[in-house]
Length: 371
Image (tube, rainbow, N blue to C red; front, side):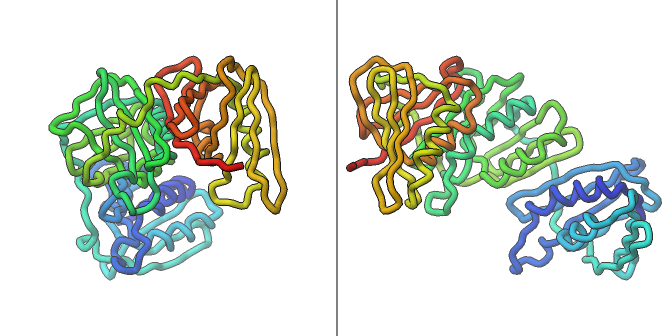
């Protein structure tokens, strides 16, 4: 195998691979990536996998001799990003050595037998969704923050995808908060499954690489795996096994105390009030009265902070406590200028929505406050 490839192209391709490769020493072969030429095309294919998530991407290159090679991804990336010339020459030998040159820089790296590297096959799967890149970005941004991050409940460590009223329903929860968005798509076939749980790592990597997919992403899946396919890139991930909980009963339908306010102003107030707290939860108390909201921090050795802002609220005086980080997380992904908070009582879940749109909602459990 011998190719000439642009330094920026090589660096970008490897930069996408690095988060996918297995970083543990238990499976050394997975610290490598596979590069192979595509017959009769001036294109090379890069492939990396950790057995759970796989990435296949294609980039243009001048192919002088067809073939394939398998080499350590981190070493190749660390070297390639330091090259200063525009073009990189990569050549493999039968003795499993890789020769890399860029301008006056020359190096030789050991490689691995290509046959030992796990192969990733793109399958024809029964479930299919065609979604615009922008809509997929919204789906990920507006739900992934609420997914569980530890292994205690593995079935919550991702985003649940299902169909609802002809649209796709993206839903995540960690037991303390929930985020849901409904997105209409051009075509939707659930195949043999009612819903699937997509791992947070896979969605994070897809989100990071969305510019490579083009205008649309073709999502295909069955009960085992899911594929995200674009112009010159494919991510394939194993799905999370288990049953995602029925979250419909958790979403309140009868919260009668409604407050509307400026989203950026509320975020600013939360940053002010939570800045003094040393606790992990950073608790904050909201006190609502006619036309205003008072935010207060808990009194600690570090002092105390309060802030007041104007809101649209005309119901009874009301107090409730929250983990301020949960509020900040949902407010930071919302898109509209004004948001709506819906309350029932100090110990019932609160619903947060956009004032103008009804396709997104988040539910946050309150904190018990005693100050």
